[in-house]
Length: 112
Length: 115
Image 1 (tube, rainbow over the protein chains, first blue to last red):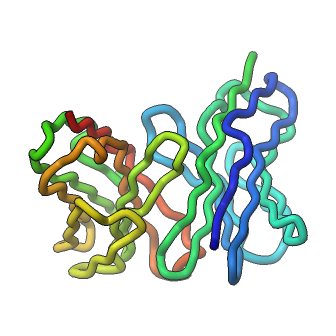
Image 2 (cartoon, rainbow over the protein chains, first blue to last red):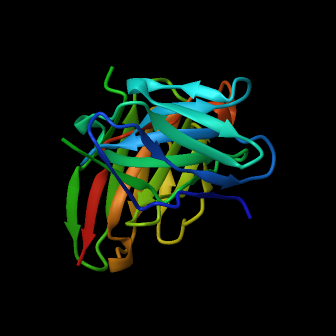
C-alpha cells in the first residue's frame, strides 16, 4: 500500500541550529513529493516539491529537501532554524487519480 | 487576489443538524478538494472535483455531499451531522496543467464541532 510516514511527532531545536524533519515514503510510480507547512489556525502552505531532476530541492523560507530514492526518503532541512519556523509540517505524495497521501505531520518547536 | 476562502470559520452543530460549508477560489483552478484534518492523522480527502459540474468520492466520503455548480465554488454539505464529524475542514484547489505535479492551495479552514 502507498504511504507516507513522518516518524517523529515532534522535533525540538534551538534557534540557529540546523533542523531536519523526516519523511519516508512507499509509493508506486513516480514519486511526486511535497512539503507543506501549517501555522496555527491557518491552512497548509506549500514549501517545496520534488518532481524530477536534481535530488536537492530548494523552497520557501530557506528550506530545502533531499530526495533519496535508495532510502525512499524526502527529509526537510534548514541550516539555521528561526523561532518563526515553529509550525506543523506535512510531507505529502500527490498520486495520479487526484488522491494526495499526507503524512501525520511533525510539530516543530524552535526555542529561542 | 484572495486565493482560497472558506465560510464559516467556526460552527457548532447539534447531532442531526445540517449545514453547508462554502469554498471559493479566484485562481481559475480546475481542481478542487475537501479534506478533513484530525489529530495525528494528517489530512484525508473527502470529495474532489475536476471541473464544473463534476464531483467524485475521496477517501472518507460517507456522511458528506458536495456540489460544484460554478467553477470557482465548491460546497460541502453535511445532511445529518454526527459527533464523528467534529473536525477541521480544509478546502484546496489546484491547476490542471500538470495534474498531480501541481501544488495545492489551501483555504484557512473551518472548525466544526458537533455536539
